[in-house]
Amino acid sequence: MAEHRLPKRGLVLAGTALVLAMAVAGLGGARAFTTPPLSGLPKGPVLAHAIERGKLVVGVRRYPRPAPPEAPTPPEPDGFDATLARQLAASLGVPLELVGLDPAAQEAALREGRVDLLVAGVPARSTHGIAAAPGSYDIGRGLLVSLRRGKVQEPSALRGASVCVGEGSGYAAAVSQRYGAQPRSYPSSVHAASAFMAGECAALAEDAQVLERLMRSEEWRFYKPLAGDLRPPSDAAIRLPEGDAMSRDYLAAALRQWRADGTLDKARGARAGNLQFEITLLKDGFVCHS
Image: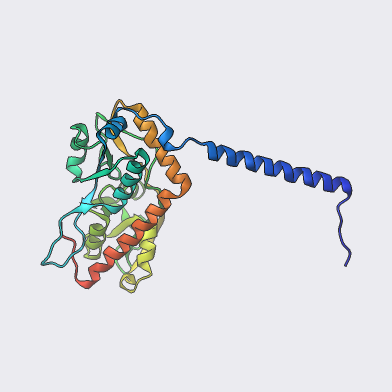
């Protein structure tokens, strides 16, 4: 079998190209390495006050976990929100205090200074006096599921139909805008799944990673995917008081870093696992207390 050899000139050019490629790669690596860490970025009044106080106070969603009917549990902070809040506190080098808040109390707590920030999903409405850091921390695609032999067999049948969603879910606006459906909000994604399984809604909208895991279980054989690639039209943004552009920019930089280094993907995967476990408890007789 004949060998194919490059002429000397070809070898020189190939070697030069290789050296240039390595140099470019090294330059890119050097740039990535020299990107200033979050700790080196300036902090505005909100974050500076938290550092001076020695504690970051973050408002998050809360809900009671599935429990036996005779032994309800008190509401606890949402695990996904808490994970991101811990990342923020760690970047500032201070301890974290979580404050679980019902939807109606979240923005008042921020305006009144009872919390420094809100990490609580997509706000139901925008209000004066509250700003949002650019970028979303809810980056997963959504999925809609329905009863396999129910009334809704095609996405077109969703117009006017009720769709269960968890509090702060960006998929609420998505199903309304895309399909003309009526989103029905529940205290958490677990509550939404429980309500859907009880027949309170024609469909359930949730992170595809969560629903795809559930659809592999025997208990979910009665349900089917209805529509995929659901994208939230609104950002699940970190909210802070208006007028602090420096803190807002810091939070935006944190979101960019977490997206680049896989922090958000890991948090989303952990959330999917936690929700799968909590929803699976429902088949054992546990209920979602409101």
